[in-house]
Amino acid sequence: MEYIDEITSLKNQVSFRGTLEVPEGIENVVIAGMGGSGIAGKIFQELYTKKPVSLVTSYDIPEFIGQKTLFVAISYSGNTEETIQAVNKAKKRGAQIRAISSGGKLAELVENTVIVPKGFQPRSAVGYLSVPLLRGFGLLDDKDVELTKNLLSDLDTHQTRFEEFGNDIFQNKSIPVIFGTPGLNAIAYRWKTQFNENAKVLAYSTSFPELNHNDTMALENTYRKDEFYFFVLTSRTPEKEISNRIRITSELCNIEMHKVEGEGNTVFANTFTLIHKGDYISYFLAKKRGVDPRDVAIIENLKRELAVS
Ligand code: PA5
Image 1 (cartoon, rainbow, N blue to C red):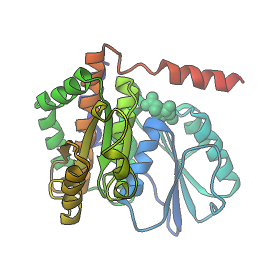
Image 2 (image 1 turned 30 degrees about the vertical axis):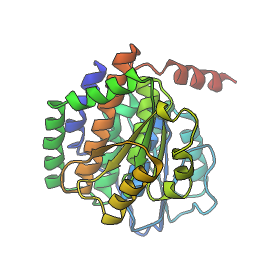
Image 3 (image 1 turned 90 degrees about the vertical axis):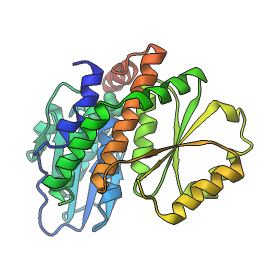
Image 4 (image 1 turned 90 degrees about the horizontal axis):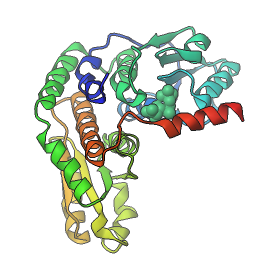
């Protein structure tokens, strides 16, 4: 599959029927996952606020994990060392374990695994990896899926703006800096990681309003200021407080922020249309740079070397 086909498959991924089985009586949720798989946990953490949700992005697990914990391991390949070790530790604590994966060791280790289609780069399977969680916790209904599917299809036929962003970043050899806003922090981070993995450029993400308490001091006077390319991600109708912050920050720090909005009037539609826009921009930047967006050879070599060390 060409990488562009992986990107355009997002509209089909959002109608994936896989659903995580959520047991009764859990007190907290812990999601383990790295890189392109881990992002599904970050998205969920931002959208689900009824119970405490913690993320595990290393080998160790928090002390509070026990029998009332729903522990969800997400690994597209099913073979990521950190995630597998975390599952083994959570098992010893008696946590209720679930997994989302295309197979590998994880699917062997966890009986209750939602199996997603093979053949994608993990980061391109973001729909397959997120939807089972959102469905399992009742955060997604068919109407929402239909709306989002249509919006994503529409974006697939209007890619010019994303290509222009990619070209601009390429022309100026800029470093993308992505500012999230409430509810979209995980997506700002997703953009950063897509710039890293697809386009092979360093990028940085942070979020309003927190950035107004630290980054703001650097924005006006930082070294090589003209080498940064600032994005701000918002919903169609951001809270007034946030719009004001964006405007005032831009004026006080004398920076131009390229505003990119989510589409649709639901959280899911907003989230996934913004994911899609970032995927396209990083893809077009990769094309301009002449690098293969699929290539993650260094990550794979690192995993191989760690496995034998
Ligand atoms: O997108 C990628 O290729 C990486 O970020 C992987 O997701 C990451 O290395 C973890 O692997 P996996 O998703 O298979 O657990």
